[in-house]
Length: 280
Image 1 (cartoon, one colour):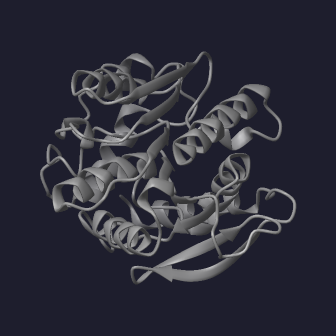
Image 2 (cartoon, one colour):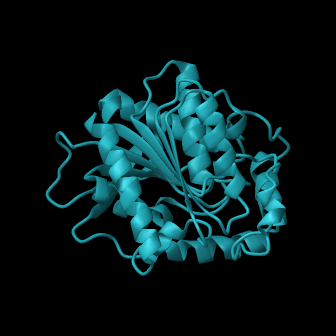
């Protein structure tokens, strides 16, 4: 990816961090497992005995974005589920290619479940962050760590091999990406590593034993098939999976929850899913 183009994309994407937070929500800088992060607290809810904790992983193709850009969506999701949250500032490519993001997310997750009851921990993410959330849980399972109560994924990028038919089939209606964009992001992140590795493309991983999954995706996305195929593979692996497909919606449409009723409805559904998971 061209350096100047990447710099421009990073500058533009930081504007997502300017979206408003729910009233009274506080975010402070912290570290989790040695990884920089933002600690998000709901009004009147301190560090002691929270209802549960959301570990949120921002999107941006593993090359752009930050904890700050993930904060507005994470805060709204956490507030709806009555959870505190941690938004991770994992390392980005090309400066830190695969598997740096997975290593950071796994280190943060391990620290979180060491401090807190795993049954009251949930993961969520959007786009690449959703793929990273799934890869983190797969890596945690393989390492023998306790698993979270659930994972919620918005417009997840789960397949870096670029094998989904929607990559070209949905180009005409996707206002954000085309197939070449996805291939470019993948090449930048992988830096020569094989795309079919399970922690790079968790769609291809062994999904057995994973916690319940919620997958939300719009029909106007080149990544539509990443979620639909993951739902089918998860079901075949006896994983509890809920697939929500929203007609006419584009990539991570949940960002527009303040102005779009469908986006607000999707976030309400995701919040309820996570709240149920930690209440079991």
